[in-house]
Image (cartoon, rainbow, N blue to C red; front, side):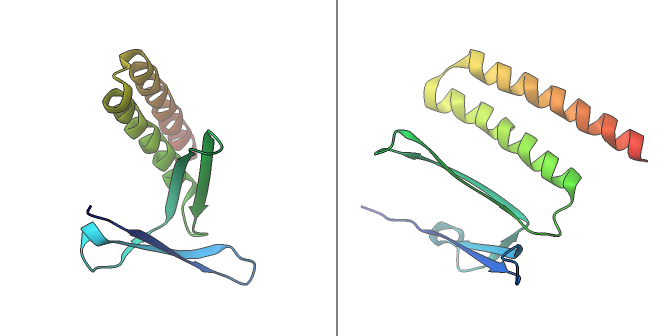
Length: 112
């Protein structure tokens, strides 16, 4: 059986706020990659529930954070098709993503 590992490293300031996030994966080569935010969701088989880790660096712009979450939900719309073939759920998630992108764009126009 082939095994693959993903490692995250979080550098924290004195108040334990993330300053830097880096990651490495055995299937991504030896390079260290950097991120401003991570969102990890796991289905705990013993608890039959979702375990989540959400972290972002203090220099992550608010607008980028909003795009990050909309992109994450869009990826979930694609995953739900692959995992369950439920097109209704996928379409509803995509519709919400479209609505949220319009909201972000409207906010951006107001601020410029």
